[in-house]
Each structure stands twice: as structure tokens, then as C-alpha cells.
Length: 485
Image 1 (cartoon, rainbow, N blue to C red):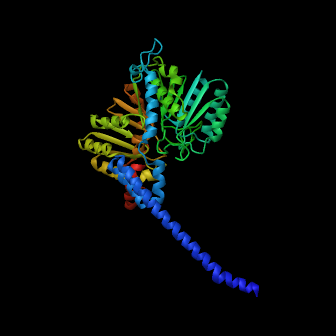
Image 2: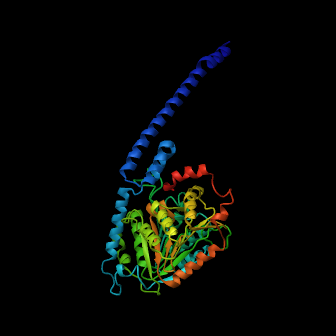
Image 3: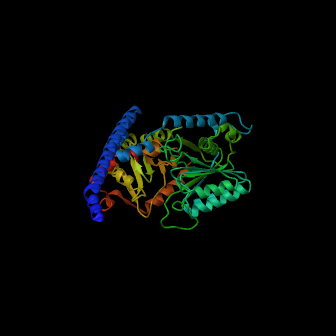
């Protein structure tokens, strides 16, 4: 009898009460979450308006935050600010301090940084694929006599990444000064063992801006996308390749990203060193005065190449790399080639390309048929369609992911470096670029671009395959948030 009564009480009194309470609690929590999300969304919209963003960026955040608050609100707090004022101010102060130190009188044989980093006297070398880049960076690590400075977005926990970590650890144990700067997002949750190994050997490792904003008073939006490797403050490797098997390795790999790097020796390396040490001092919370001797050092001339180093990011006044690209597009006379893995231009670059194409100038755009970022592929098609209509020659690279970044103008100028033609690279990330002016250097870079064309198909041919292009609905939705990608 007691068992039957207990069963009846559970079924008719307790269970309904629990169901009611649970449902009511769920209802209350759901409504609280909705209201909280809406309030936060309004606060974010107010903040976005106060930051005086461009219209496309504003409406992209408005769309995400209002219609998808549970996703949009945390995304904004992690990645929303174009330039976090406080952090950008701190970083800018450090960069300016490093610049002031560098421009002070150095050893008597030096001519001053302003006269050297963007002028003659440099050696240029093209590393046209991942095998050559891997072999060269390993060789430079092995031959360095006193200093190794490396900044990278991604350090892979794989064969290529670990081979480089092993070499850095060995050189640190041998007394060479090793400083490795990693971006916290690009190398997130991959490098704990590698960092420990290098530090244990006597090397130094710093992480640029923690990913989660609650870890410190930082912004996950501000990413260091620069790739710089400097050896003995004299030889440097720059470009878009990360220290990862997707980008480089000892043997051939048919799936490896198509990309290249550039070797620079000579006075221009002084500017790369200055950029690295400013980033390092910020991430490692050090005073750049500690590196005064290195900052003032200007390497001797090593060749006949003229190259200019451009830094871009929240620590730089205006947007110099973007301005240079706009200037090139608007002023080139005959031929312009743009090679980029991701193509989501701002309105000025986009309209400048259309206007220039309407004048009959030859513009070629090379992008991968399928990149490793599906959303950016979808977002680019509205731009590509209008550029094709305007007469731009759009070529899709078909064999694999193409990660190279290169601009060529009239055979007289070339830009290489870490920046893509997208909103994040041009306006948010810390980037590094080189402008090349020497005809023989430009000829080698043009040859690399011509090799890509052998494996490309034109836009009109690709458009015949409906499986390649996204649906109009997907394209329109992703296009709304394209300024955030």
C-alpha cells in the first residue's frame, strides 16, 4: 500500500510540480537571456555609432548583433573594436619610442634609419615555394651567430613547426639569443609544449594579445599577422608563410599551400628589426630602451635592390598600406596584377578597380578557386561578378589553396608581405609589407605570378559550373557581414 501511495504521489503531485517548476524556470531563463541580449545589443550599437565606423562595417555589426544576439554579442566583445583605443595607444607609444631610439645617432658608419630602410643597398632573393622557405629558415637558424628574432601568426604542432622549435631550442642552449613572438589566436592552444621547450633551453617566447578578453585587459580583435624572421640583425625572411606544414616543409606535398617568401639583407632589415622589437616590447611588457643598441643598428649594404618597408596596424597613424594600394590602383598606367587568397575589398579599392577597368587598363586578379575559408569565398562573389562585368580579368587558381600576396604594377613596382585584400588585413591587423622597386626583383616576382596562370581558369569558365558558386541567398546573407571577415 505504501509503495502504491508513494507512486501515486510522485506521478500526480511531485512530477507535475517539477515539470511546472522546470518549465517555468526555463521560461524565465529564456526571457532573461533574450532581454539581456537585447540590452547588450543596444549598448553595442551605441558604441559602434560612437566609434564612427564606415557604413558597411556598422550595418554588418548591426545585422549580426540585432538578429543573432546570442552569437553577435560575444563575438563583438571578442572581435568588435576596429582599433581598441587604449591598447592601440599603448602600442603606438611603444612603436614611437622605438622609432625615436632608432633615429638617435648610432655608430659612425651608419647613415640614419630614415635614409636607409627604404632606399638602396639591399639584397633580394625569392623563395618560391614551401620547400625552399623551410630549407632557408632552418639554414638561417643553424648559421645565426648571436641573434634570432621570429614573429609568426601560426606555429604548427606538426613536423615543420617542431623541426623549427627543435632548432631554436638547440641554438638557445648554445647561447644564441632567441626571441619568438606568437599571435595568441593564430597559435591558440597549440604551442604550450613548444614554448616550454624553448624557454627551458634559455630562449624567450611571448604571446601577442590573449584570445579571451577576460584573460587580461586586451582585445581579441587586435591580431599580429606579421611574419618576420631576422637573423643577426642583418638577414630577414618575410612574406605570408606561417611555420606550419600547410605552408612549408622538408619534402614535396601536393596539398601544401602555394605561397612564397622574400629574403632581404642590408639596411632595410633595420626597419624590420624595429617593427619586431616594438611588437616584442609590447607583448613582453618591456621598455624598448632595453634594446637601444639593436634599434640603432643599421646593417651594411648587401646588394643593389631598393625596397621600402611598410608597417600597418592600430599602432600606425592612418592606414599606410591601404593608402599605398589605393594610390597604385589609381595611378598605374597599363598593367596591374593583384594576387590574394581572400578578396573582400573596401568600397574605395573596389570602386577604384571598376573605374580603372572602365578606362581600358588591364587588371588581373588571381584568387584560389577554393580557399580554406568558406565564408570568405562566398562573400567575394558579389565583388567578383561586378569586376568581371567591368572588364577585370579574374583567374581562379585550381590545384590547391593559394596563399600568396602580391601586387604588380606596370613592371615598375611590387608589394609583398603578410596582408590580404580584405577588411581585417587592411584596417585591423598588424601587418608588414615590402615595396620593391628594382626591375630584376620585380621580374622574379612577375615570373612567380606567371607560373600561377598555368594552373588557372578564367572567371567565365568557372561560372559555368554551378556547384562552384554559392546560392544567391547564401551570397546575399554572407555579403551583409563581409566587412567583418
